[in-house]
Length: 281
Image 1: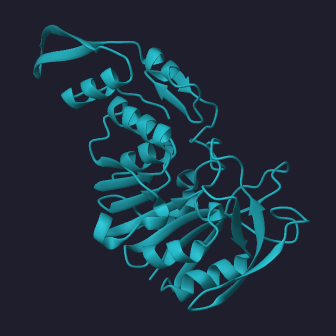
Image 2 (image 1 turned 60 degrees about the vertical axis):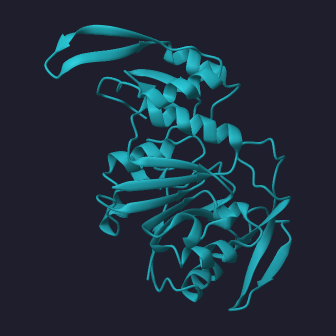
């Protein structure tokens, strides 16, 4: 993430957050400006990032890099950087549900795209705390981060949205159909980034599976997840990766009839097939 404007003043609510992380914020009054008296906080951004053992996402603040090595300005990492996406989807003024924001890399982009309201659901406590830090550092006033399991998303808990961003989530589930069925009651359109199965993905030896649901049967392959302590791992031992055609049929079966596949850039070293999708009713 690249920030070209000065860092926004942190509001009083973040004071309690940073105190819970072991930092005491000291506020100083500065000279009169055009907009009146301005307050800034005397703290080190690097100290905030260094508090956490590790970061996955790279952020830029005032021209300096912080966090990890994953660059959310690349098309391979975030489908929000793919120009063709905006031939089919416009986030400006829309309400957006984001599933699995990790550390807020895509959330910052969504906010810059002009989304009116963003609710982002994160299931790992440490990631959730990082997201709250990022919210305040970037002044994401239109974003609400929620600590919860994306598999339990429903209209009663979160309301309805124009768009749901489902990036890097479906291939971590043992039954992605359940989530898609729930989303069909929550969001008018889906923007999806996911791996899918073929003869070589996730591996040539991956076990073939058949997923049977109340509305259809879908073919796919099994993927073994890592430890619960791994930041990019799912929350159960194995996941189900449908074949591309089965994923498309799954989306149609839950009510998204208008599907557009936007192929993502491929890397030679990447063993997994990846697809970007826009699904509308």
